[in-house]
Structure formats: C-alpha cells, structure tokens
Amino acid sequence: MNSDDLFADDELLFSGEETEESTEHDLEPWMVLIVDDEPDVHSMTRMVLGDFAFEDRPLEFVSAHSGEESLDILKSNPDFAVVLLDVVMETNTAGLDVARRIRSDLNNQFIRIILRTGQPGFAPEHKVITELDINDYWQKAELTSRRLTTSMTTALRSYRDLRKIELNRESLAQMAKSVAHQIRNRTMTINGFANLASRKLGPHSEAMEYLETISHETARLEDIVNSVSEFAAIDRCDHCSADIKEVGEKAVDVCKGIADELGRDVHFDIDFVEQDIDSRPDLLSKVMVELVSNAVVFADAQQPRVSIEVSVEGDVCKLRVSDNGKCISSEDLPYIFDPFFTTRPEAVGMGLSIVNRIASGYNWGIDVSCSDEGGAVFTVEIPL
Image (cartoon, rainbow, N blue to C red; front, side):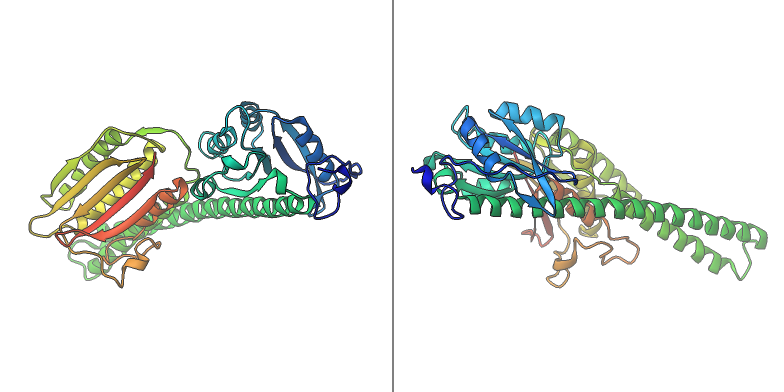
C-alpha cells in the first residue's frame, strides 16, 4: 500500500503517514485503551486521533499489547470510555475473549468496544457482536481515518449517554429511598394514633370501623413503600456464582411458608438440576421467590399445584415456574411487568417488576405462556 495515499479523508488508515501533534485542552480527556500486538497500529491510531475531540474533550491513550495486559489495565482503572480491540493476538479469538471478560468478569457495561482485525477469516458472528455489546467492527484493510473518527464519535456519544442514564438512575434510586423513609415515618405515626384512638374509644365505639380502615390502609401503604424500596435497592447485578438448585430449594421453602400463611394446601412438583449460574445468590433467590409465590397465589383454588423445574439445554439454563390456575389474559399480558400492575386489589403489584429488573440486569430472557392445564408458565432463560 502506498504511504502517499494515507491521510486523505477517505483513504486507508494503516499505511504510515504522520499527523500533527494533539493540542492542549483544559477539560478532562476521554480515556481510550488501544489493544493490539502490532506496535505500528498503536502509533498510527495515536497519529490519526491525536487532534480528535468530542464535546471539547481530547483523548488520552493507554496501550496494551496483549489481551491479558488489557484486562489488568481495566481492572485497575474501569473508567475507560472506549477500547480499540484487536481480535487476533495471543490466539485467534483473544480479542473476543477480552470483550467477553470485560462484560462478565469485570462487569463493565459502560466501556464501548470497537473491534479491529487484520485477519478477515476470523470475523465474529453477529450473535457474538450483539451479546457482547460491541459498538463497531472493522477490517483493518478497510479502516480509513474518517471511519475511525466516526466510530470513535459514535462510541463516545454512547458512553456519555450510558453514564448519564446510570447517574439519573442512581439519583432516582436515592430519591426513592428518601421518599420511602419519609412516608414510612408518617404511616407509623398515623397507625400509632389510630391504635391509640381505638384503645381510648373502646371496642364498641362507632368509630372503630373507620379506625380499622385507617390501620389497614396504612399497612397497605407500608407494603407499597417496602416494595418500592426493594426495587430501588437493586443497584448492580454483580457477576458471581450461584448454585441454582441450592438457591431454589431455599426459595421453595420460603414459598411454602407463604402458602401456609394464605391457608393454601399447595402441592409442589420440584425438579432441580445442580448448575452454577452467573448471578448474585440473593437476586436469584428473589426472582425464584417472586415467581413461585405468584404461582401459589394464582394456582387452582380447590387443588392448587405449582411446578418448579430447572433444566440445562445446550448453553442455556432454563427455570420454569407454572401453576394449574387460569392463564394470564391477552389483555393483561402486556402489562404484567409494569410497576404496580395487579389484578388483585390487596396486592402491591411490584413482584414481577422486580423479577424483570433483575432479569434485565443479567440479560436473562423471560417468556410467559399457558400450560396444558391452562395455568401460566414463566420461563427464565439464563445463558451459561
């Protein structure tokens, strides 16, 4: 390739001409990690993007020459905005392994990943690009300065927006906790005065019916506050290991207690396999308790039966929870994961919202269907 063709806007990038040095900026730079086993690629990338700025902030580059070195850097400093990642390094899939570990082991969902390769035969499948949240993918032989700057702009804009969303989410979660605390204080005061008035007036007072209603409604408001607090407390779906059989057995014990409190003699069909999955045990337990307790409530009134099955199918672990009651109507189905949606007047309607929040955090799939007996079947698909 001719070095004379180098720096025209639309010409190929990795050919060898230099650019001017980057200018000084006062704003904090965007951190960019270059991961490639070819030193010339590092030099060329720094030359092409030396004067690049996004929202008046320049780039600051850090180099890694292997996948393991890049992971060590990201462990010590997770605040990189973009990683320019070579696919073929120590192995033919080293870059993909790094991308996978960034998303799973390091639990870094913010950094934007741009894949580059000089080996066209090792292009990743579209499924891999989607699952690993890859921003862009280029063959080095096709990568021009214009394409690189465009990819960098898109990646930084995405990183900025993700950070803003996370900051807003954290602010809303903190506000929800604060509001819940204030409401809880008021409900305790209201309920306390209602109980005091009950004792003062005596059991035969005409006002007792109203005071009981006040106590009942404050207790219901307390349940709502607790559910909102629980939802807001799900801050990070950290990556760790949980034995779904062990967690599931404990969750079923909890739900058996719920069934007893409701006066329901539920028959539980349980079929678990031992399988470690990527989840915090407490969050996995919450998903299973909410799904199984929901099945307990909606199972057949006369002979309630709930089935909980865990199976492994290929590279997916499937959790199925079903009951023998009535299936969810087509009118209600689009709203069942919405906060506060419920068909039971006494319920809060946050259980399935919490399930959906956790599943979304781990990229689990949830499917809802009807069983052969007519009841609802919730299937959670957990990638292994």
